[in-house]
Each structure stands twice: as structure tokens, then as C-alpha cells.
Image (cartoon, rainbow, N blue to C red):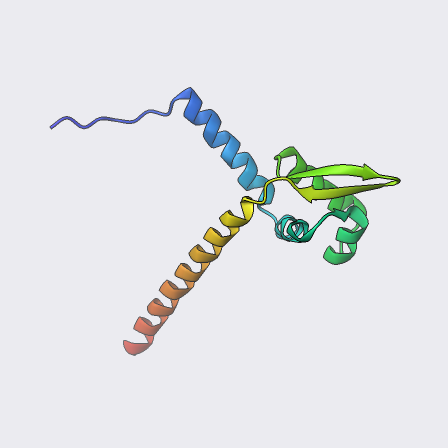
Length: 119
């Protein structure tokens, strides 16, 4: 029986790098919050700054990271720039994350219960 070894192709590597870029972009609690807020509607940086409780430059940096990953867009209206969610499908990924968190918690509960019964 011959075992075949898979090798990462150049195309696969580019695909994984693109996925990693998006995952890195959302890997901060403030950015997760921003995405969920933008699902509700457009927001300007001042609105988000008040909600997050951080300074404007920090929130602007978070917005820049999300925009560079293609998750949000912006549009100017007068003196304000409003941000919006370009890819609402990312929220489905959040649902998957919640399933993983729930599964991990259930498993930890089972481990804790097993440890307590051994006493």
C-alpha cells in the first residue's frame, strides 16, 4: 500500500496566507466589537471611539487593519468618514467560533466533573 504525501502548492499557500491575513485582522477584541457594531449600521470613528473607550488614533488603526483585510469599507459624508461592513458573511464565522467556545466549555466541565468524582 502506497502512502501519498501531500505537498503545499503555491496556490494553496497563497490561499492560506490570504485566510491568515483575515484571521489576524479580526484577532483583537476591539476589532471584533467593531465588526459586530458595523453589522447594525454605519458608524464614524468618533462613535466607535466612544463605544470602545479608546483614543481616536487607536480606533483608527483598528479600522485601518480591518479595511486592509477587506472586511470593512468607508465613505465620506461631509467632514466625516463612515465605516460599513463589506462582508457580513464574517458573522457566520463568529457563529462557528461560538460553537467552538461552547464545545470547549462543555469538555472542560466534563473534565472538572471527572476530577471531582475521583476525590
